[in-house]
Image (cartoon, rainbow, N blue to C red; front, side, top):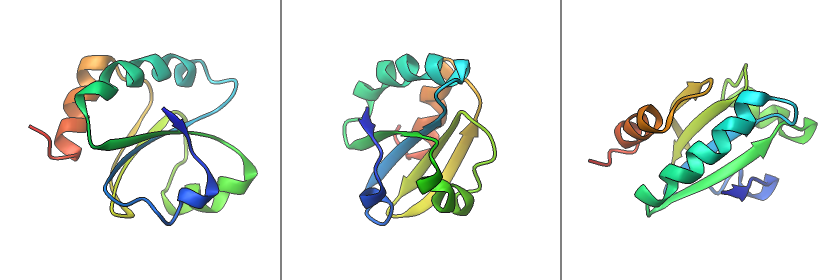
Length: 103
């Protein structure tokens, strides 16, 4: 999973999954390996990890992120879904398949 950066904010074309996490968040920490496990099932999807920092506050406000961990699904710069809290592999994979229209 690639680290998210400010230059990507307006360049989220195609399918993108962004994990919004925090440094001291246990659920965030546990979600990283879960996402890494399911990434191979989604070949044409960009996966990013965005650690909460002040420079991202405007982006997070636009995306209506109020809690961490949050997973955003963005297609062509448009939010198509968000999921809050820790999810196990199976549930997260089914949810992503639905949001990304992968079947």
